[in-house]
Length: 224
Image 1: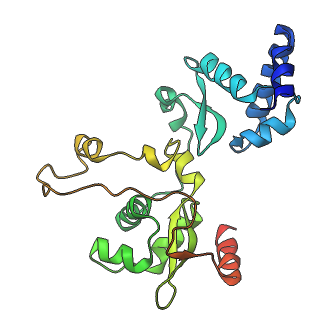
Image 2: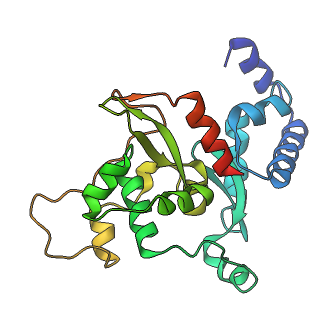
Image 3: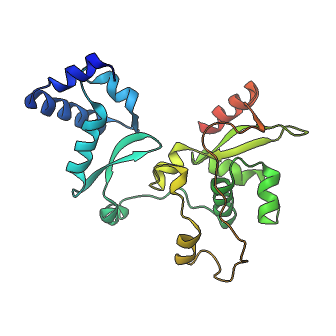
């Protein structure tokens, strides 16, 4: 923030700040998807300290039926986790995943970027193309790029919608080794050197190239 903007923020009256808070609340309430800081800033007065307003609004909603949460550096209003049971009666779950799809999703989440061959090696069995298609149609897995190896296989990773659905702010919030053990998802008799992999971020890794134009077209067709 420049010195001029800092002075403008410092000169905001309490009534102006309350109005900016109301504007921010209205934007978040009406949004159909999470909003990033740049989008929020572009729609609020130039002298608005959006980060401070978000912090204030988040604190105000902390103990209410709706919470302000951050998902992949974007913000949205969402039903409080302890009240989600109220909505389950009317919710229709259209994403009943098979065991193969769940295992594949977990591998993509923790090992990304991964190729189909990587997934099959980790699972120990081959996977049908339909498994990845289901995860991509659900909006939880995307084509990231192409591996810089012979054949240039497509690499896969998770999406922002995956983080949003599972209530994660970032991939770093995925359950760790002890959390997975505590939930009974891992055998307690693991090898002493066993470690839960750390997924990479959104940016392409050193051994990935961007998708080809035809890849991007195919991904767009899958999303429809």
